[in-house]
Image 1 (spheres, rainbow, N blue to C red):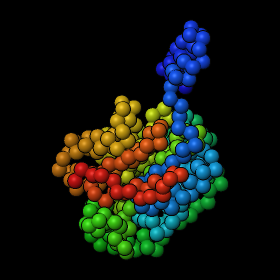
Image 2 (cartoon, rainbow, N blue to C red; image 1 turned 90 degrees about the vertical axis):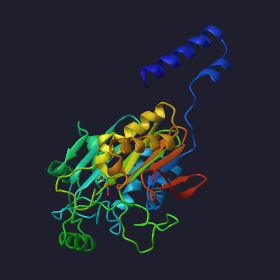
Image 3 (tube, helix red, strand yellow; image 1 turned 135 degrees about the vertical axis):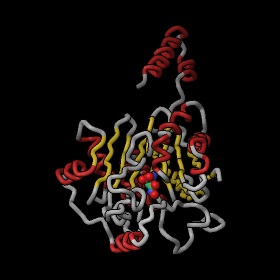
Image 4 (cartoon, protein in one colour; image 1 turned 45 degrees about the vertical axis):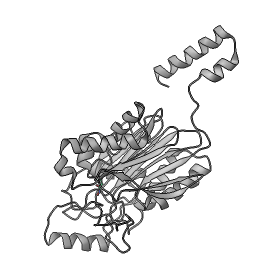
Length: 340
Ligand code: SD4
């Protein structure tokens, strides 16, 4: 509990002693967290199936942290998703390297960077959080840790991703293709059937029945990146941030631009100042534009945020960013607003 909260609660208690009236206590305490209102939000339309898995835990009054881990494991194991986990597109040297992080309601967090050969990077990140005195393990050290904890070494490069890499090698031009309108989405911003599968990272935020928050983020990162490149997704504060007093945020898109502004932490701090989740995401996106307006026109970055009242919102640089939402009332994919 923060010292400010302790102070407020102590003050409230003091006023009860002075007033001797229980009614005053009921009117004066901080608003109670929303209870029995679990919700999960995640990046992109494939977040819908991930949300369904998370929802099983949330609906059974489970913990947000467990829900987000279970949720993002779905796309991690899906070979048709070429930007997350098994079947992710490799780096320019042909290695599939994964980035992931997870954060709970107590500021506990864990992360793996440039992890190879393990599908469920998110579960390794959780073990880093729970079993080590550290927050981040990278590369070979992360793999060693995973193997020592019972994970099995796998080949994550599927024939489809290997084929795409060999095709890329013909030109070897590093030009990230983002989910920009007219490239992957039709005029109504719906994913084009049979279109190239270039969805990004899954970032997932949940609030459980107790009103506690948890978040997870996992990706194979930018396709054909330099070997060893790490994006925003496993960096606490950049690709994901959870503050159980305020809210949570996560991102998808060009990680370098998100790291520069410590994007997810920025979104949470803006919510602390009173911005709605959508406005907070918009401000963060505008910060990216301010730094380099020309560059911002040609890349995609999207943020999604969830506050302590269970309100969610999103904003992106480009059209085409979608978020998936599941709660007791809805199971939907929404198109995010965007600047361009
Ligand atoms: C990254 N934000 O590695 C992530 C994922 C991504 O295309 O952009 N994938 O920068």
